[in-house]
Length: 127
Image (cartoon, rainbow, N blue to C red):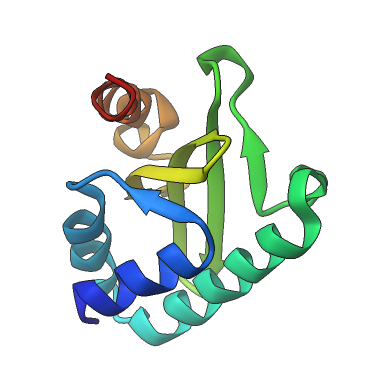
């Protein structure tokens, strides 16, 4: 996946990304063995977000992380991959901050290990 193509796709859907997000995300999906299906699901989620607006939070794909201000989570679940994208929102759209694989029963992949990274990146973006 070309980083510029991904950036254009996100911009088309009013999504900006922290500078560290794109290389991080591409590295994760390239090593997953599921790159094509993850990208297809990602595109579906972007369209869903556009079409549903705030109602997207009534689906299983989007979640507001209540204890962390305007931090939200996008779930991309396909076959053996359970990915999370942590993002914030502002009037201009979404700002994707951090991505990781969530693995059942693995403390290392728990949200608690990844939320500080997203918060730090969010603070950098909103300075």
